[in-house]
Length: 515
Image (tube, rainbow, N blue to C red):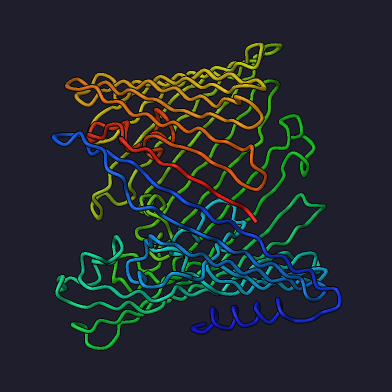
């Protein structure tokens, strides 16, 4: 796998230049210019003009032969963000070479996320962990999909993460510093390639009423260090799972009165757990869910899941999945559609309890809530949600309200939220979003938000105006930082008691030309 990227680039270029009689090749991309005017505020109210930034992107597509296609993307940038590649001005971003038959297709790829698996419940493969793009997309590999092969459907991938080099433990990606407990910023650290492999296999039975499947995933990683460990250490994460989906409403006629009524179950085992010398060396996981239950205007679903200690390992699962380790979790949801009214009511409750409290610092968690969604005339909708989250630190109620409206000219959204009601961390947030078609050529977008706490009031604003009147080009100007209000009042960074952020005083101007 070490030379996949070089081979991919060579084959893609060969496909692009091959003088095939029916070859279809295209070149497209864009060039852009950006500059910003910024004020840091505080004791220095002056505005400063930042360094101009130039960026270009080229995309080459070709189909030199039937059922074969290739894709290459390169970018050039005057203000690089990859710390170790500052001297490179023109660099590779992504590529693939595709081969397709009647029942299968294969990709040889680099810099792309092709790691999804159609797994129903446990999600033992997390795409973000596999693609490893902390410093830009680095994963490369091979993916194969097939279908309708004697009733079987499946997918498999083999991938590697490119090496990284760093000077000092503080520059390591989050979590990696734990592997070098004796390192300092004076040490040079080199981390080798991590290899991933995974597959998914499905089989439908009884006219698609039964679906059986299995999933396998493994990560092999080898770490080197110039200053310590003197050599290399090897380790791996490995999980295998089996699942079944039964359409009970069609398999058992007596249950058809409750709708489709689908029952899904998946069980898994971490076969690498013995490496960690834990009490349960091969932890298991189990989740079962009943969905699509209908009784007139009432819809219901429920699930039960339990995870052994260290079932989800850091190499394959995301942090949110790892939080489920050593937990049993219950979830029930009901939705009621008011007859003859455009009103939907929803209620839910979930509870997570640690399996072995004496072996972990995790504690019981609980959430319950309800929601009302209403559709009004003239394109307006409204939603009110009240939920309560409970843990060992306390009880955290939350009230959320939203009204939206849309027509051909404008789309508006207004939100209101009270977070952590009746606690020392209570805050109130108001948010507004507008997307306006000023004309065929001019578009305007804005978000504003205010957060009130017991000791302060903070605001953030973002606005953008865009001109689309030039053929093959666009121009727009922005004010503010869009990341501060991406999810308006539900933004987890700005709408937080610990946040001290305010409006980012910066103007940015962009010009982009497409070709």
